[in-house]
Length: 235
Ligand SMILES: O=C(O)[C@H](O)[C@@H](O)[C@H](O)[C@H](O)COP(=O)(O)O
Picture 1 (tube, rainbow, N blue to C red):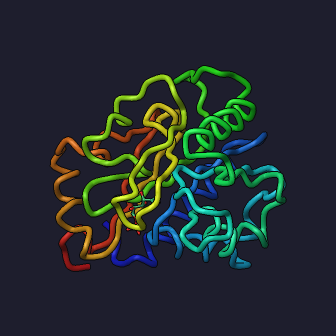
Picture 2 (cartoon, helix red, strand yellow):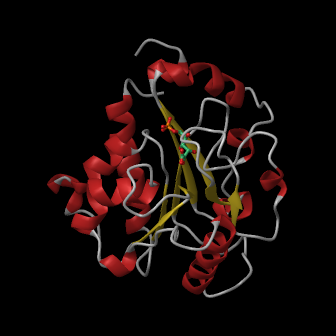
């Protein structure tokens, strides 16, 4: 448990830099949406951190996307691009979910192909991680990425990416999400959870309630970075 959201971001940056340094060929980072990672993204673009990342080698993916155009402020990759990626990463190393596809399912299939081309195989091998680091948030209902409680998406074993119709959940648009097996195929999964609004759901997940945030696990290491407000303690 860390004192505050800014410390969570700094600790997450340290994990990310270490994971990138640990892969001397082509590290792959899977980013997340929502407001939680924005302080981390701001740090990564700051000179002190920026100089510690081998930008030419790192590839940036996104764990889930809202099915809105690439420049819509609700687009998860657009937020990451605006805060740091467009200034720091070569364009060919940024892998957005193509929301200009016909529909979420078509976008999911195209992204699955992008991931498979990067991985060099069409089947995931638990012993060979797709991602060096996967960032995750936790929604107030226990969702993570765009995997919502009770969804059939949670039992998907073959597909790496799927379209989901969650137009009834904030921000009320369909979504595209990586599946649990694709997210699990990672050296580390790093949850970033801060703020008092996350207190109840975080305690349920920590108690093992059957929620997407509980089911999402890396085949490698799963780390939770939480602040005092979310953990319900004083710093
Ligand atoms: O597209 C999204 O909304 C997400 O990727 C989602 O899973 C998010 O990470 C959680 O809802 C936490 O969001 P906050 O960080 O805004 O609380």
